[in-house]
Amino acid sequence: MPFFDKVRSKVVPLWDNEMLPSFRKPTTVSTLGVVGLLLVAGVTSWCGAGVAFLQPNEQLVLKHLSGIETRNGPGATVYVPFLTTATKRLGTKLDDLSYVVVKNELTGLEFTVAGPQLYFLNPHEVAGERKRKIVLEKHEYVRLLDAKSGQQRLVKGPAKVVPDPFESIVNERQESAVRLSKLQYVVVTDSLTGNQRVVAGPQLLFPGTYENVGKPRQAYEVQRYQYIKLLDQTRGQLRVERGEATVFPREHEVAAEGGVKDAVNVDDETAVLVLSKASGQQRLVTTKGLFFPEALEEIVEVRKLVRVQPHEVAIVRDNLGAFHFHSGNASGTGGEQSPRCIAHPCLRSQGCPISSSPHPIPPPGLAQSARPSSCRLTASS
Image (tube, rainbow, N blue to C red; front, side):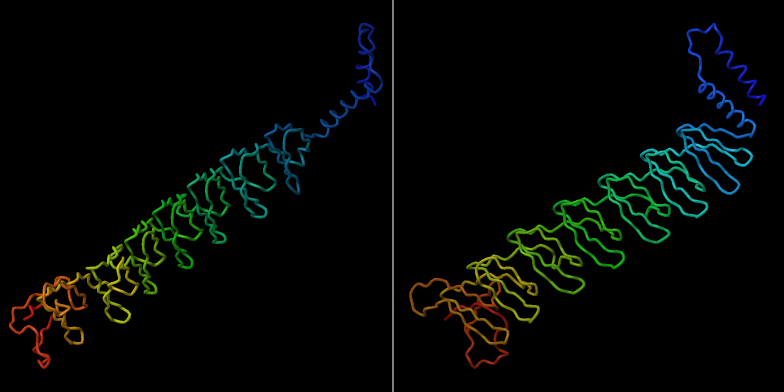
């Protein structure tokens, strides 16, 4: 062909020149390589093909008559301009704290791509705006609500959180966990079931996905000589906790009867009048030691023993109206006598007045209405 003969006539004599003795003359293979290169260039120019050179962060989008394809750099890509439209674009660079939502326009599928990376879009994909990840510290957490499924999830720190395409932050902010000291507790409520639970410190409390945490409360420090009654508001039951202890109320419980109280020290001269709310009966406790009432018992009165002198008599009427007589002269003999101490449910701590009546002790036949209506001490005749 005239074209190749013309090229050979210009190239081969150049290397056959006698003025270049230091160079080795090309072989037939070298000559054919040069010719082949020129041939490719000529055919490419004659057919109108395009060549695109891509950098490492570049991508070439090729739109053919029946589809789209992408070529990622680095490298060179050859295409036919008349049949293909080529467009260069940069890859999406994401750092360690950023992410992007990508949507496939052909299928409608959306997903997130998190950094750090250089992301090249696939055919039919478009990227949204870059967004910042949710950075949680050690004491923080975040709730995410999926608008597509209605489900929530909770993520604890420390973490870098990437929400899914349809997720949003509940309350529009991350929240802090509750720090509880040794003497604090909180009531945690499940918003789905309404169930409650008590969480005691010390700890850093992260709630569950659907749980709400109440305000921290102080536990009750009960000393060895103290007690506290707690009332369950849902069942109406009472329980007693004795010291020495740190008492954390259960769910639905509140302190009853004024909170922490001191037990009564019963000794030789002190007794306790107790009312049973279950039976309505009263009893006088004289057993020595600290007295702690039961859950359904109420301390009516703390009484001191009444001292009856040898020349005195204590007249006591019980709940049934019957009279009892206690003489200070217990032995009934003459001579010097010591005062007598008596304890009776009717005798009150302030004592009974000494009567000046000439007939202090009513005879057995005296009418009930004429009898004294209260306990008293009277001088014996």
